[in-house]
Image (tube, rainbow, N blue to C red):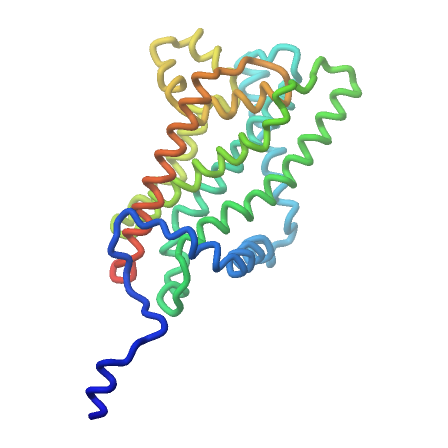
Length: 289
């Protein structure tokens, strides 16, 4: 009799793997928004908790990279940045680029880095990569303040720099960069669960991608100097984000409506594919990690 009663028991909650490949279940992510904020706090506080310089690393990295690029590409290679000081030109590109790379590399090992948590308690796995993107937004804000400080300094020195009216849309550009990094990161994290060697290629791939994203040179330069390879930059959506960011902040270069439309389309597709593959992988990743 007891066995019969147990078989007919109605459970309040039943946790099962998602069977629908196209199920995003974003409503559940919103229900766990408190946990999302806890992950954001964890990412911000613990990363540099046991370091000597702590959050100062947020400032040191873009400054030293900008100085290096200025010496190599502007002073030695002779790449012109027009009326804009080369250091400020490079700092603008690097600040935006760093946010993308932080989102990409941070989310690309989601399953491996959180296997212990995923194997013990249930919550929407999508919360972890989203928390990484949000926490990196805080780091970007710190680095952007450094850019503003140098912007004010050069402006006070009489440099021919000015904000473009389109600068009011700059936050949307950063959101676009974050969503693109999130989508690519989730896709890569799904591949890493089965093919571990992908994790070794990420750092190399990011460095190569940086040189194809117009971080340290204007897009027009690559088309002028080596037109046969200009398509590598022309069809890179990241290059349009970097170029547009400099156009907004420094009023240098140009803005391509076609390029931005192309970037938005690629970002939407990459994000949706990344989420779908991520949701499919979470069903069985614990058996392969």
